[in-house]
Length: 155
Image (cartoon, rainbow, N blue to C red):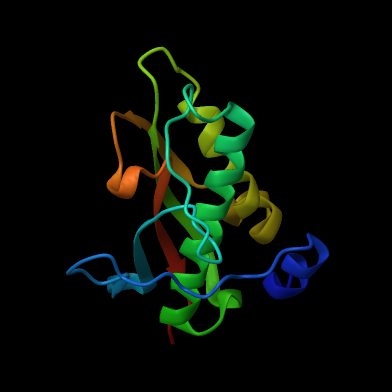
């Protein structure tokens, strides 16, 4: 399945890779064709999103933000490896959710990003192992941030 064709069928387009927010590598290749993508937030097209799930934002909005985080992760990955069709397996994602003390649906928020991966790469290659972690605050007061590890054909 062609990832770009699938994006088009879903009515989605990869945004430009987000600019670095500090002293780090947006993506890092290492042994065995693995590529780690640093955490990405939900801002696409310069639209800032600030606040917490369970306060300013609903579960459904959080799922959309997690999906946007994943689009940004994929944009960074594409800039690193050149072609998303080189992805063999989504190994692991970690989704951080800035949330109110009584918000317990972090895994459901993370489904927004996980579901996109399954839609693009299929159930077997696209369903990652994952963690969904509730935090008090994220950089820039963003509500969701996702990092990921991919296995790619880097030959």
